[in-house]
Image 1 (cartoon, rainbow, N blue to C red):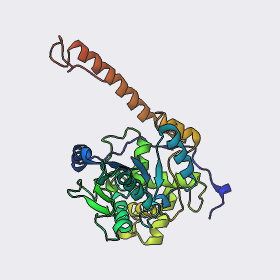
Image 2 (cartoon, rainbow, N blue to C red):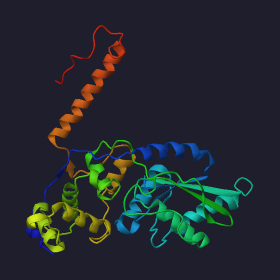
Image 3 (tube, one colour):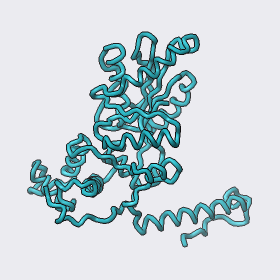
Image 4 (cartoon, rainbow, N blue to C red):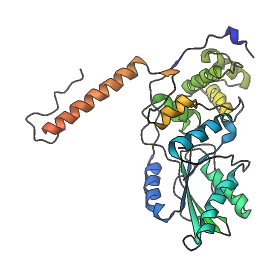
Length: 332
């Protein structure tokens, strides 16, 4: 470990390019989910209606109480933290669904649960865990380490409990069509919610290193330019003519984080102030990350453009009713 006294950590992290991923199967999945909701009694939503935070073994355990209290205070919503690999707390979801049938058997001769959430949060793993615990049978849902393994809403329901009868519906992980906040998209990519090839692996590794340093983890150098060659040398990531494969080294660094090798961390701001900002509509409260000047200019320009377009619509210029077109419109 390197002494913290030798570190000069950057005061903030500048990133101005939002990473987005919304392929066709997600759009179709949203449509099919909405069509099948009428036949669903319980919705399990994995991370942003039982709300389940799966892979809890990878997150900061001390953050669980703060998140639970925030959901209770701002949403009156119950939250469960699970680890589908060890079946931790998964039985609580089964009991929640089963209790609906026990309390109102005439209304619920069986209960259907739909599991929804972002890509790669472990929805299929959670379903398999519930099946193991409920009826002691093997996996029914395909799983994988990459986002997008489940590409369609399951055509048949998966039974996870016999008496009372509980069925599950698996769904594809769905992103919002456009993440406007570049740093939020970087966090999603870093945790495996977006295909890695759509992101800049070296930027993700740089952000991860910066966050680890700020969390007090000083096992690694604070400069990604110095760290990646050392990783390349250690794991033998070499290209032709002996050059270091920095991209491969960056992915190794990221995957070690995803597997919990560096410890348990939560990237979002879960301080009381941060959670209040999130739940009251203030957006990302990460004060340590700032936009670049180009990003600020871009956002300002988008606002100006939107105002002009709205004004032109009212005046009929975009419908052919106005006296002039928009061909002469120039930036500035």
